[in-house]
Every structure is written in C-alpha cells, then in structure tokens.
Image (cartoon, rainbow, N blue to C red):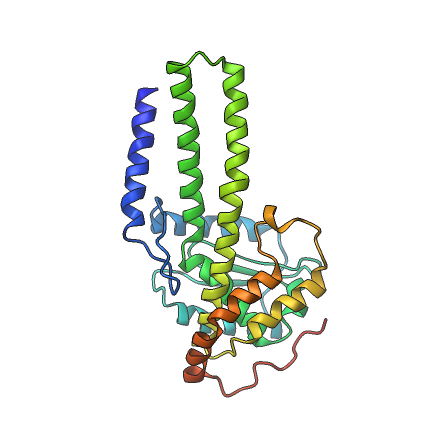
Length: 275
C-alpha cells in the first residue's frame, strides 16, 4: 500500500513538471499532460483501425475527394510533421458527427455533411478535429483521470490506516467524491477542450485559406439538423452553440487577418450539401 502511495506522489510530481513546459497552440494555455505523445500516436493508430473495421468507408467520389483535399490543407496549417494524418468518410446518413484520435486519425460521417453545407464548413470541423490532436486533448484527459484515480486510491489508503471509518462507509465516501469530481472537474474540462478546439480550428481554417466567419454559421446549421438534445449544458461534454459562437466571435478578428493573407481564389462557400 505504501508503495502505491509513493507511486501516486511520483506521478503527480512528474505532472507538475510537465505543466510548466507544455502549452496549447494559439491559446497558450499551460497543459497538464503525463503521457508521451509517441505512446498516444500508437494508441490512436491501432484504435483507428479497429473503429473503421465494421464501417462502410467511402473511398472514392466527390465527397471523399473534398474530405481529402480539406484534410491536406488543414493538416499543413497545423504543421505537425510527426503525425501520420488519415481522413475517412464513413457512410452513415443518420450520424451527425466527426471525430479524431491521437496522432491525426480523423473520420467524418456522411450525416454531418448537410450541416457543413460547403467546403469552408467542412474546413472548420476538420480544423476542430485536427485541433484535438495537436492540442493533445486526449492525453490530457487521460492524465487528469489518472491523477483523479490516484487521489481516490490515496484517500482510501489513508482512511484505512489512519481512521476508524468502516469499509462500507469508505466506499460510500469514495463513490460520492468520484461522482462529484466527474461532474465538477471532468465534464467541464471536456467542455473547455471543445471551446479550445473551436478557436484553434478557426485559426487553422483561416491559415488554410477558408473564411473563418463560416465557422460561426456551422453551429446554427448543426442545431437545425440535430435538433435540441434536452441535455443540460452543465452536464454535457459540449458547450451550447451560443456559447461556442460567442467564444469564436472574440477570436474572429485575429482569424480574419490570417485569412486575408491566405485566402483561396476558388469559391469555398458554394453549397455542396443540402439540408
């Protein structure tokens, strides 16, 4: 037991050192990250293969070509040479979603295309997903959960050795603390990641030559396609659309300056997918 406590303390000490040197792109937020990027890239690659194994992948056609083109432009703006970027279009018209795994493994579902509407809309969501990878959000979440678990284990050891609290009562206490930490720390932390990815994604799309103002309109279309979930924003891993839009408007002047230097000549606002 004492070895476990010492190990937990060591992990926390290492984490403190990492916080001092790791920063998120653009926002410059100091980051808590215990897990090496090389390890996360390996996890992302193997998980990507598994997740795509049972899906129907659109490998040819206009939609797949647009996804690949947008992915190339956004990943160049992200400038992560160690990432082996991959972009897949999953055929599922009922799934309004896109996701990213560590190391740059990205998938879009065909169901999200009407909400994107045009190439610029896809560039924003692509930038958002790429941002999760470049900002190491996955490893940061795992680091936080690892630390949380270590803290609860340490408390159990302390109560068992230094108090008269019975085992069943300790279980109740630890359970309550675990739920409280999940609602109070883990879920808001995830919402912060989403807002951060919105900002970074908007900057990436502007750097790649796409009009960043289109990123704000995507959320209106997303709500129209998906409808209201009824889930309170406080318990959701995603902020409400109006909060996301307000956050992006604050960054929009800086994104526009990047766009003006890199604007593409072709019309990226042309409607490609209808609601």
